[in-house]
Image 1 (cartoon, rainbow, N blue to C red):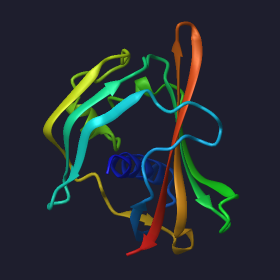
Image 2 (image 1 turned 180 degrees about the vertical axis):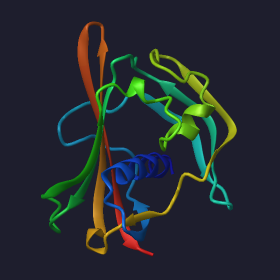
Image 3 (image 1 turned 90 degrees about the vertical axis):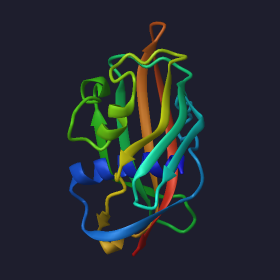
Image 4 (image 1 turned 120 degrees about the horizontal axis):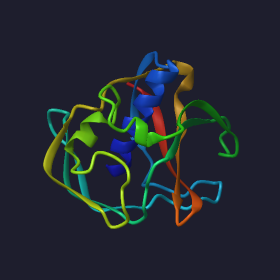
Length: 187
């Protein structure tokens, strides 16, 4: 469920900005966050004590703790890519949409983004996010962020969301990446 929530938020954000949305689909996730094929480390987030619950009314509720196991400070680059599988062997992927932020710290507080409802619930709403910082959510209602995804019918199939984050730590630029595979199916 953790992957589902985060990927839906990012996928909708990318889909809206790239204007590739057209037909109603369902999203099925194939596991948890995975390492990217580019050899970068996974994000410095511990989500093991965070439950993300889909309620009967389709609202999402956060309960538990999110801990930063690494520091994130400005400038923090973020690139979100949606990639589609082109062959059945899983060898060939095509980037269909992406969204880049030269400094995500500049847009984290924007009111018209898909992450707005989550950030509004956080104690710390701006960069930097120090290592060891913990956000606690006590059955916090995020709202209905699982809006209808619409894509062309020829885009159904296997996808992956790739999220790259860059930040400076101890004078060194560090790049991290996580990937979440998912399947787009016709409703």
